Image (cartoon, rainbow, N blue to C red; front, side, top):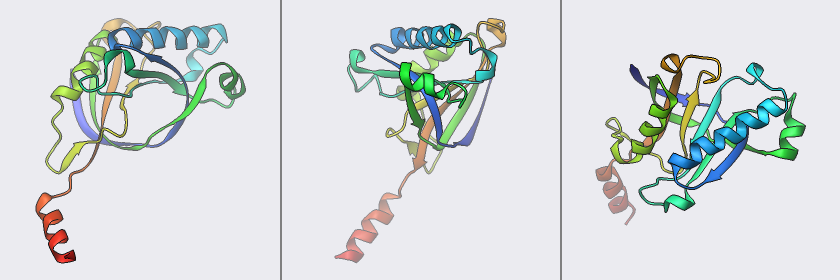
Length: 174
């Protein structure tokens, strides 16, 4: 089951774990580290959603150089500890095409791996490769049945500039 739509994600401060390497390995490794840190520090359900940031297009960047960030919202309650033990960043905001997926998060990972090569933007939009593909994990896989897990895969988009308009503006400027 999936649904699709255009959404605006606001910039958000997050604590994160970055793992580099092929996404099939780095995604589970990053989440293992993040969930381990949360458990070790006693932060469970109050944390809320998880965010996965696919930083690089694996069709262009060498697999060993691909970066993946496993993130959670930065709660003031654990900000000081997070700053000492992990890293803090601001997730870039902007327009995204959102696809809601239901089921095993392994299926979401497979979708993310195909996203750069199969994504087709709506007319007037293009893939914005300056921002990461963001996956918002809505459920904790340790507490919800695999078939009921929900995630939003959000692909960054920006307005496509009409080529004819660019050519006309250039000739007017001359």
